[in-house]
Length: 102
Image (cartoon, rainbow, N blue to C red):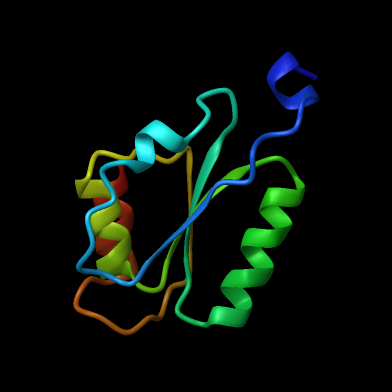
């Protein structure tokens, strides 16, 4: 196990509904820990996913739909993993989001 994963990350979780600038996120994330962007419109499912990932040592960013997730990506945040629902409300599809995240 790497030294970074041997210590506990600070719990960092941001939630985006859209219409907000998240440019400061990059200063809050610890580069020693992988970042997962969780995109899920069901709050309960998103909460379980985020909690489980944080328990495993991942930092998380949350978005309630692909539109909000795309805003996070446009702010320059580059997550290590995109964890997304497939069918969500909004203009941007999950497929388009995945393409943008590449």
